[in-house]
Image 1 (cartoon, rainbow, N blue to C red):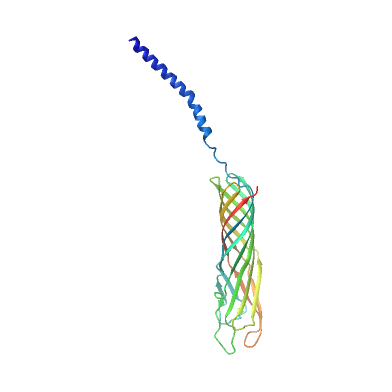
Image 2: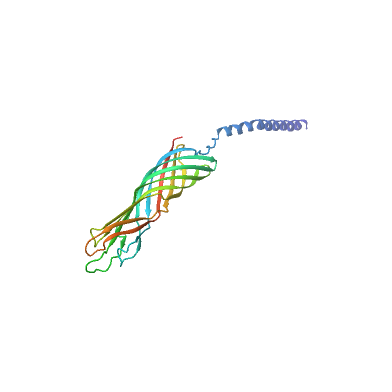
Length: 266
């Protein structure tokens, strides 16, 4: 009976020692595990200045030409056509200020090759009926935008998940528009016009840091609110109207879509 009590007491003592040892060891092991776990990566800091490049495409799907002086009485007064789309490519410089963990302000300048133009076949004012002597007929407008553009814009961005920047931008663009009107039945007639434009530039995009210094982006930028201008020429000769004739040119919105990358200088 005494031996059984001794065994019970010894077992209880060993259990108490084991619990005490575990209590002393566990915090140390937890500290070791915490020390071995990698520290979380700090949020990306968007503040700084960047330089980079991009490529993509531009399109001008609407343009209107209006006959102001009734050069072609049997034709339509106004007709619409597309300048199509072309590849673009250029560069940009920007500076950002990250005002808070989720909010960003910035300014950006960019320039790019851009040339969209009508091919003449889709911009034809319907001809008059053939008369003797012939009257003006196939009036064709060769219009174009380019061969480049520039823009200065302010950027306003919101940062998601510490790294994904979704931004909008608005500012002013610099584009040159030009037109040339010919007449198939009046070979000596040529009307020309052009205008340096400063349209509204606006767009949005998504940007993401690829590394500490490199970021990638996808962006859409449009140019709108163009000014009208006149394309004028002097006509003279037998069987054709004599005098100065003009057409009003109304450019439509230009759309661009770009993929680019930037390097953070500081």
